[in-house]
Length: 371
Image (cartoon, rainbow, N blue to C red):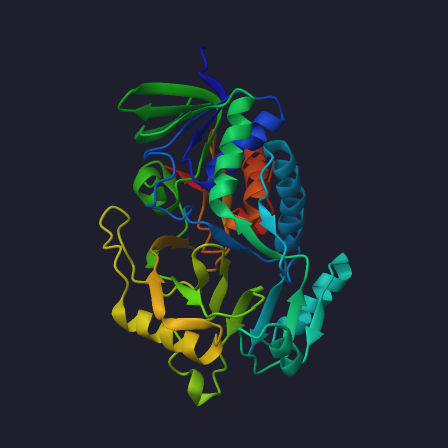
């Protein structure tokens, strides 16, 4: 039987690109097929930055994010690009789990500390704080666009083929191998990895029974920093359900400085449910107005009226746990629920192992029923 590559990867966003890179690290040949052009803005992987947050309380998440940290460092060295800006990350607001998270970090030897809100406000004058702050200094942001390019450049330098503008119509397990049907013909690999984000249900549901996935159009914004010397950590901020002043919040808020674009802030997972092929790319005006109100009240270092909306997708599971599971010859990565980018190099390695029959952590490995 003729194979076009050892590994066929369907989807050229961050997870597919990471899987391709992971395969080349092990000396395997790779063919990656992506429906859209390189650098497109229709999915969840575009944009300049993402939070790099290591403040997780569960062992499964900590295992992945710590592995990812080492792999990000390896990719930085191999690509010659700076991919992590370790400006620190702060978690604050009404979050009863912060002490549990801090204990999990202590057990893993991850540096962290709690700051009084006044001390935090003095250190980061562009932000307001009402509660104690959990600071993780060895965290910050990932340079997302540079990361995508780094995965591709290093993988292709090792022989991987990235084919863009190649729509995949079907993925099949045929005689124990991964078969892909496209308008340009069929391709076969010994193993397959499919990670197509918001299009997971559309591409896979005829062949594979997936957990429920909800696609939403998310709408963060960039805010222009005011004149002055401000230091900006990345941040997660949780509302207080007992505080009337927080009643307008849609969800916790995440954010970070995006150099050259401003301070990015957004509600988490509250956008309208959407068809990824029929998006409006327009922000909901009520949610945007609420986000601007948040900026006025909590980010005094930005001009709240300067908001420039951004559009991306979340593909979320009911539990917010990822899907890293196998069906036939295919490893499926899906449902990253707006928190996956930081884990990408470790997810890529995991998906490659899953494709070859190794188990993922049970938290991330629901049973997928072949149809």
